[in-house]
Length: 100
Image (cartoon, rainbow, N blue to C red; front, side, top):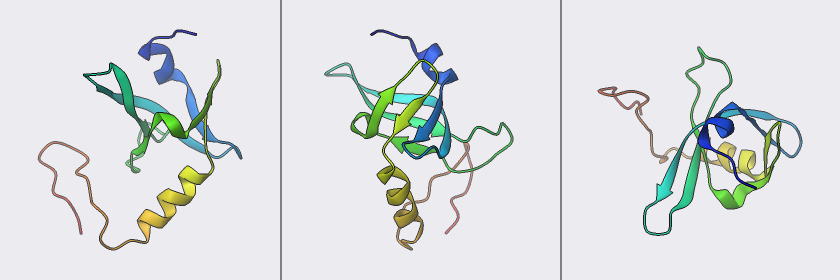
């Protein structure tokens, strides 16, 4: 099956158990192999400044016409990272300061 990025951006991303994570807003492509390296998922709420979730292709269980389903383990990994005081912080905009 083929699709374009415009169609992927419209699809909600949720876990196997139905927890909505957001929607695809970007992807990184490996130039040598022309393969998707990771997808960037933003919260659904337009005004939400929630964290962006990065998903690798092997964490995706299915891409359907109405949604993208990812492993429930993705949410568990995300929670474990939040509890790690040494985690990397990412600026959410250009010239933004990273909070510790």
